[in-house]
Length: 223
Image 1 (cartoon, rainbow, N blue to C red):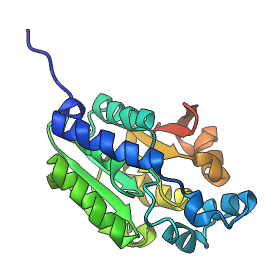
Image 2 (tube, rainbow, N blue to C red; image 1 turned 120 degrees about the vertical axis):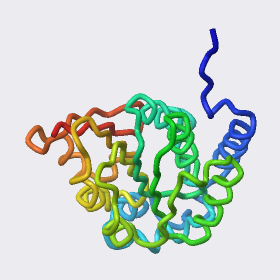
Image 3 (tube, rainbow, N blue to C red; image 1 turned 180 degrees about the vertical axis):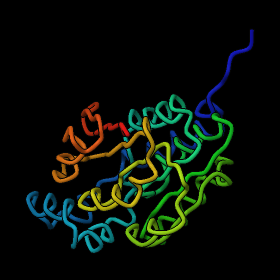
Image 4 (cartoon, one colour; image 1 turned 180 degrees about the horizontal axis):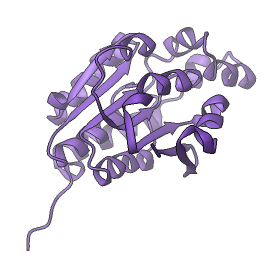
């Protein structure tokens, strides 16, 4: 009996992911924002207005999901048989790689990913090319509040929020009408967006939501 093999275990992709995680784990955002107090960093991470300057200072930082979150994203996309995915916050493309691998193993699909920092788009695209997954990914460069305002698929199976935390409610609003029953929303570091958490945890707003692991909020659209 033959066994199915995940794209994540393909030597080319597995090696690329491991190298990217090693680089991410060795990087320290404090080298570029160490002059800010902890309180100021927290405020800017959740800001709806100061996020561009804050994240521009981190343009050379991977700001990657953890290894565990990457694998979780792959598993969620496979288990819901996702064919259309929207990602807010590409960075160097670690989460994008996991989601695109899931799409390939699901038989194909479309992943729209958004990033406002041009240099990060270049690096992420190169990583997806190296992995042989770039054909599944549409990169939208610029502010997601504009780039996600047009030409979204009629149906979105999974939404990943991993950009400026203060914008999570606005990005969800842009995509929400495309989320059918059972669609998944994954928000990384959602504790920096209390308005978002209040929304997806409110029984009347149409989601079933639960904190997962240490820093992920996992929500399912009910209708």
